[in-house]
Image (cartoon, rainbow, N blue to C red; front, top):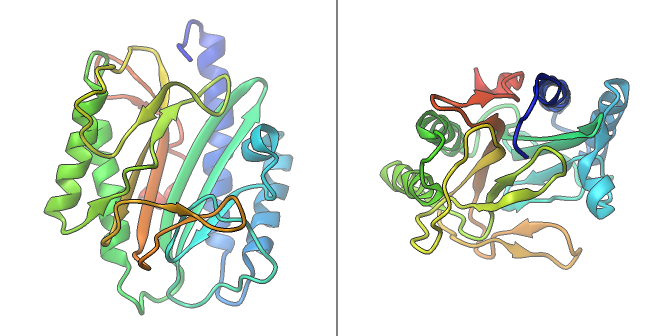
Length: 254
């Protein structure tokens, strides 16, 4: 969507604060020995308390309030009472929701407890690369150039990017124009970021794999070779200068 009034900005700020707060508290709540369903149910209660509705449930009938992906799962992981979190797991939580007709999307990966499997460098790279990408986004900048920047920064850090998962427009629904903001340079993508538009920018940074594959549950996307992937995502408003990061409430970023 494109912001046309103060009411638009206020509505987006409210829902962005709700998803950012929920994501932060879910991360703090998660502990080894918990199931991913327990963590998700906590997130669902928090969204409800804030007056927000789960976007994946509203849009796709997703069987969870949020998406929780663990280790070689890349995205859209279904919260499960059988999936028990372990010390050192690489966990990704993606929270998207609707409030008052406005939608926002926020995600982050983290290491649960002690980093016994050395996932932290991957997490740090995903987070820092998104920060770098966001600092370069302006109205008029080519989307392909930001994708190329993400890919180049990942390569410099010794990692790769997942090429079949992308960022997207957001605001009046969960997915809007531009429908694809890739993590790599796509020379055929001639679109540019537009001032006052709202987008969710994501970094999918991988240890080896470049593609995510859907599992038999019909939702979860994972790497075939067991590679690990860290993702970070913010909903932003494009300006003539650095963007307004609406989901900055997410304390994972500190």
